[in-house]
Length: 134
Image (cartoon, rainbow, N blue to C red; front, top):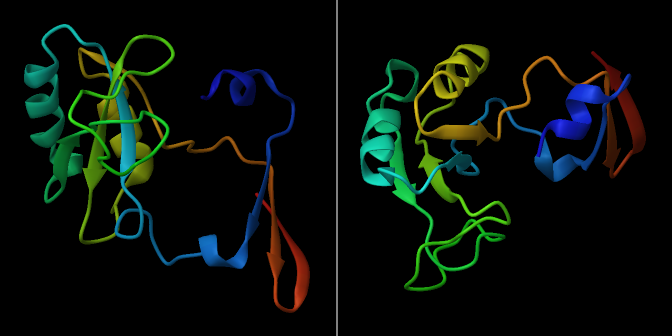
C-alpha cells in the first residue's frame, strides 16, 4: 500500500526467482487505485497518458484482492475506491516517469509502482538465496 514503505528506514523485498523479469508490465497487470467519482473519465485519462501508451486499462470487477475479473460488480478496495488494471504487451519503458504521471492524474489515489523505495531484494532460487542491494 506504500504508507509503510515511505516511512521505513529500509524496505527489503523478498521474492522467489519466478518474480524476476527483464521488464515490468507484460507478465502482470499494474494496479492503479482510483476514486469512484467520475471513474470512467479517470480510466480514460490513465489510458491516454503518454507513459501508458499501448496498455489496455481495465476496471477490475469482482474481488479487489485478485487481479482476475471474477465477478459482475466493480471491485471496491478497503478504502472504498476502485482499481484499474493496466495490461501491457511490452515492458514499461520508464517506470519512474509513469509513476509520476499516474500520481499527478486527477482521480488517481495510488499505483503499484514502488520506484526508488527498495534498499535490497532477497531472492530465493533453485541455487539458494541471493541478495541484491539497491
